[in-house]
Length: 327
Ligand code: NAD
Ligand code: SER
Image (cartoon, rainbow, N blue to C red; front, side, top):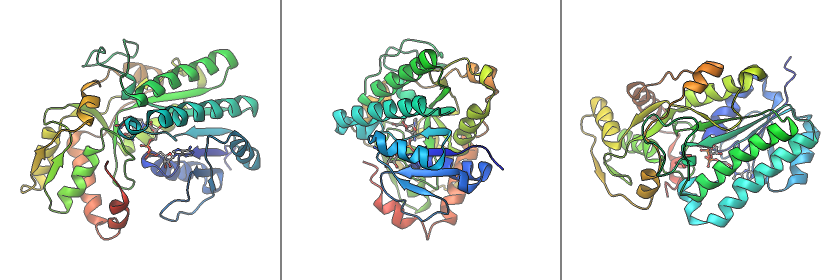
């Protein structure tokens, strides 16, 4: 019987959907409470609580109701959506984190997970093999808020001893859950078009190389980090995490190996400047050395997984896809 009682905040999102499933498999469905602004579109077995994490007393009530001792705080507004409403993005990304850290401190939560991102880096950061500690200066409100969030997490660890752990995710590629408004979303959308026999118009230019990761690797990294012994966690900012780096041209060429008639064209929009401000690849040796991180999915394997799974789910995925705005 698991001693853990876990709250996932932002559980309906691209990462939250998969993470909640994996945590439930590991710790038992009854021990993992999903929460988000609205009830999920697809019904899932398990407890769900409506929560606007900006409401600190509602958050406290849920923590006390279930005897929560771990929080995975995923709720955020991502890079592309964030530029459409910078003030709201700052409020959600920062004030929600304050609430989570304060409740964790006051209610003696044993561990908190905070996802960071490649968006914490900026135009002055070294583009290749970006070091763990380096020049940052992010240029999006999302990156600025996430970088401040990393600092706040480290502050709560140093000042209050709160066991807060963090990863800098690359762009995440998944087939079960759709992305929520990021600059890397093209690398999911492209598979939907390819499987449906449609051409894809990419909002990034052909040679824009970015760090990406398959969802299974991202979820495994998250759980491995959270389960690592405390003394192994030497970095309370986000750990760099490298999966695979590729450009839209590389991705299209890999898809064409399986679907030779697939075609891509390029029409960069405002997301190009965001992508140009980010790094191309990361040095994740600290994650490897401290808690044994290792990526498993290369580009060929990601393509096979995405095409096979989207093909298999062709009939049941259309409604959710149509509700999705890839901005
Ligand atoms: P998403 O947009 O798919 O999901 C975010 C979820 O948070 C949504 O379900 C939304 O309803 C919820 N939410 C927003 N405001 C809320 C509030 N006030 N209270 C409660 N819930 C709220 O995002 P995601 O891709 O699943 O990302 C999860 C986390 O991982 C984020 O913190 C993001 O910064 C980080 N991240 C994601 C990626 C990626 O490529 N997906 C990459 C790097 C970092
Ligand atoms: N995938 C995210 C985005 O594009 C990076 O955090 O916003």
